[in-house]
Image (cartoon, rainbow, N blue to C red; front, side):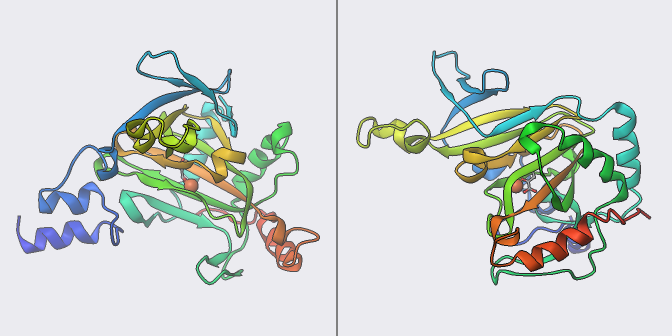
Length: 284
Ligand SMILES: O=C(O)CCC(=O)C(=O)O
Ligand SMILES: [Fe+2]
């Protein structure tokens, strides 16, 4: 591979620092079907949305309650999915970290300095209005007022993924709502075993040092909500191995209490919601 090839590949990705994707790993001969952090020793569980339990995957009889995940299968019809994807692809996809591309409809935020401003934000996409009206019919989402919609575009050719993380909770509120499109995937929740399984310290050293992973199945056209412990205590990730075909998702975020009536930044919150809920963005 020539230097020019290397530059061409590198310029197609948006990775910085420790993040990487297949496009920037390949010229260095470091491309791998798994992400780096998938090598750690794990205890694998699978989330059962009906029982709301995490069930151990290796057949050993073990499970624990897993609150904070709500799954709405077939939230979108096939026609709606087609229309949404068509609209999204009319807008520009911006290169992002770990082989993702994104489109962000929301205020400009500096999380480190805790500053938020409208910037050029003109409102959530018009096509999302009917979806928001539908989601708030679910009692768990009563009163949900999104102030941001972030669309992500994952592709196996780029080795797209998102590393384990917690979403901000200074600006963003309790419920994170994601609509999944184009392919099935898995949201992997992770936490140190000592916390997840409430092991007695010093009881089983090896088990304590392991990480518990709970696989939440995300069917195509479903909606998933993270709240409570699954929002604030467990990290979430989408691993490279779970992106088998192009996947698009839209994450909707509401404001935290600080930006709602009674909060110290309530006035800012009113302005942000006013713009967001005008649903005035039209693609193209
Ligand atoms: O792709 C997903 O479903 C998760 C996205 C996510 O966690 C995020 O944007 O913060
Ligand atoms: Fe997230």
